[in-house]
Length: 380
Image 1: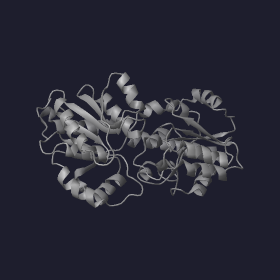
Image 2 (image 1 turned 90 degrees about the vertical axis):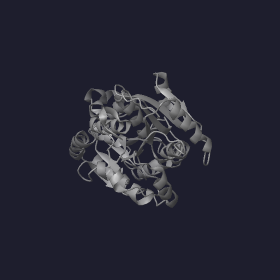
Image 3 (image 1 turned 30 degrees about the vertical axis):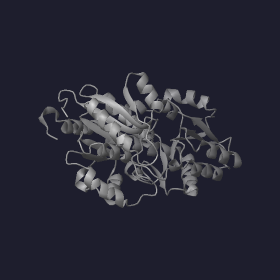
Image 4 (image 1 turned 45 degrees about the vertical axis):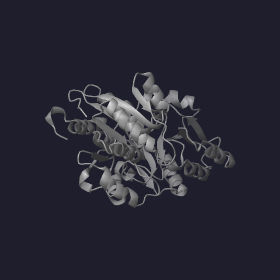
């Protein structure tokens, strides 16, 4: 394959372009790389809401409808696409996209792959078939990135990838874009029907089992004696009906509100007092970093890479996954102390600025793109 050395072609390969952390990051990589590379997106399953918006803005997006089970046709289609588009580097977001991209190189070859692992399944365990497959699929020219140290350890233990091959690149955000705008606080709280004395807790996540919103609802049932503590769930997903059912059964319609998908999350955060995360599995969650950048104290489970983001007792309060009692206690603790909320929030913002800047993240990925594409005399 002839390399487009002056302006390489980067393929962002994903399950879909729904609104999620990995998908948002992929779109940001493309935007930040626009001057040095041409980006094409490939979705293995469906376009998604973010994909619709990107396509409307002129992004090049191809959608392959992956069939259940092993889809051999998909490997042929990817190989043809990579050849036709003269792709120099494939950036595979998560393992399944990496697996199909790697298989597409057999037997005729293909571009090097940058495989980014954003998080782990729950429960996580060693996968002997993957360990064996990875020995054959990973090539010397490929690179592997993990979004945190915990994710890196899991790739070594459960996927059989050598530690020396894995580079930790923390997810990053535009911290300035999430800076708290106190002028919007009253406006947002008025829209949400909040009184000044109410404590607004916000959770931003897809409504799926891994985010475990039902534990959040059970925690609010424990807080029934504190009706001024309100929970707002931002996001959509397949668990919405189950969440609504539990809210109804526990008679929490007054204190728990589903806001659906929102495109104004930075603005919404200005009306919140506390941020909540109840996930049972995470990598390095962007929404948690965004909340910290806004200056919000965080109550979260301590799964995955979350303890790399939040320092318990310094930038937030952590508990075990599924522990609705501990979550309710931590929320009540912050509700009773404005001073503690301010202290944890300020420390969280400083940590977000120092460790989770998008500039640091993009510089790391741009370096890998250039190395792998052979740009600037750097060999892959």
